[in-house]
Amino acid sequence: MKICELLVIVSICLIKVGANAQSAVTLASGLYYVVEKNDSAVLVMGEKDTLCVLAKPILTVADFKSAEIEKTNFDYSLMVTLSKTGKICFSNATAKWIDKKVAVVINNEIIIAPIVKDQISGGVVMISGGYYEKILCSS
Image (cartoon, rainbow, N blue to C red):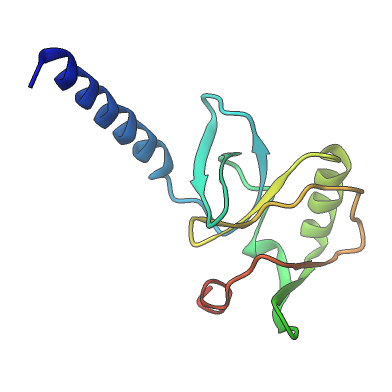
């Protein structure tokens, strides 16, 4: 094996180790701002996407008053009723994050990353599409 080939292999291994070290952070299940890669961002993998999120969540399950999984004919939906504090946080977050992505992270995996289209201030949130029963039902 030539030295340059060995250097390439070592470089690839170091890059993979660095990426895995960054994603080794355990995140609380919740809602996160999706951001461009930077020093304060955490890399999170999902079934469809690998995205960078801010390490501090917008909401966690502690901000939920209740959460229910509903099965439709073809998919699952997650309906969450937020606590008073959660309702305010979510309303403020969606107001400032219009046309940007947020990520729902459960068990340290991105479940879905929708784009915020409008401020959501009602305190009840339904997110559907892209779910897998084993992930939602095991949470």
